Length: 222
Image (cartoon, rainbow, N blue to C red):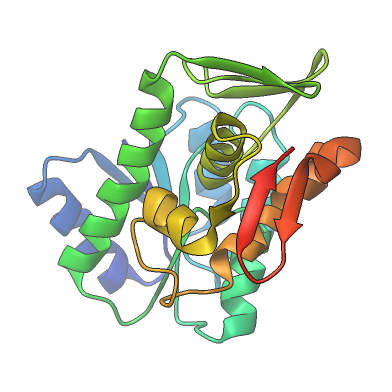
């Protein structure tokens, strides 16, 4: 099930129709209050989220989702006309898994949706557990613990931590991380990796230093 929170009826209906033709179940909302009501009964596989909304803006909605353990792991793609670098970074900082600017092609949007869902499914299907430096990852449950305390990461933050811990001690370039996690070349959105590393470090707290920056190259887990 994919939820769409978009107050523009024409855009919401177009996305709804296009996704249904691809075999997805879809439920659309024109205001946040209706989304919150539905989330009490069902957790979707993904949320497509506009920024400029009545009642409360999309960034506020996203931050509330990421702060609620029950729904924090929902993949979220921002869909918005706000297309400056500042807007993109703000959305990623708030926990968006991808950021699509209007106007957009429907097939391109469907491709981005499939890519995010595929990454989420792949991370869940690994069935692997990694424990390093006080941090443990359970891929089958898509969960991360620091000691006995669970922390909640977005899909891309989880994938970043996984690939860094999996390759601990080895330097991973930004290009490698972009290709492995975002499936695009690093020159498309060069700051994307850095933004997600920053938010990941914030969530790791005292363990943020486990992710070391290799200036001009990339990152490694130590």
